[in-house]
Image 1 (tube, protein in one colour):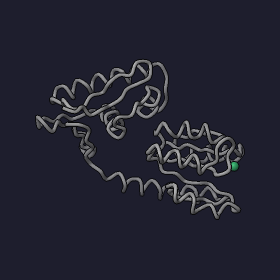
Image 2: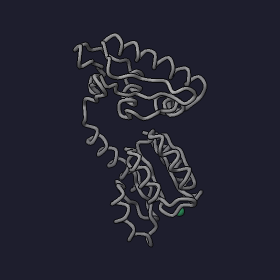
Image 3: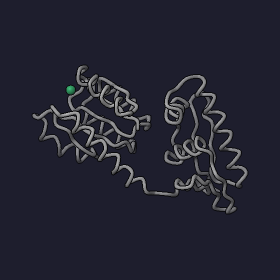
Image 4: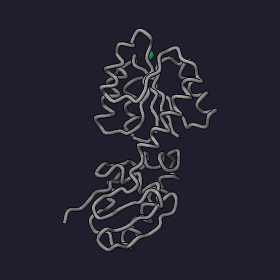
Length: 229
Ligand code: CA
């Protein structure tokens, strides 16, 4: 589970980060709304802990932007007691949960477990489709609707294909891909991205996919698109 903390109180951010890391979450921290939004838009986080009063851009605006961009991360707002009235605003914009400061770490962890369980329930779509290609997320099988051919994907191929198919028509940078699939970005992981995309293309080719393609966007990354016929 990857968590993004957006919180401008350094002491609280530190405690949150240390606590969550002890629970084996992978944690990134941003200290203002703009950087929080920028990181959140990568779509790589399972959960975003979002403070309301933030420098540069407040938490509700960040939340609104993330939802407008169809970012599916679960978002837990951190509000001061005085801001409780704002709850309604946040719910309208699509927050998943609230924690009122000050809160116990135990309570936070319990809420995160609840959110992740809910996430599991929501993720019940078991077949993703782009063009004439389908991915069964339960058994990791890639198939072509037109030819009926099917192929099993290896773990990383599957994760990469799933990431693309959940973001069709959206450019994914090689940094985003490396972070999502390998956990961090570095030159070595960029090479992996290239290699694995070539694996996926070969398999798509092999099963006869003709209305879905992974295209390279020079110097930026890749995009999976359905192709009209
Ligand atoms: Ca704050």
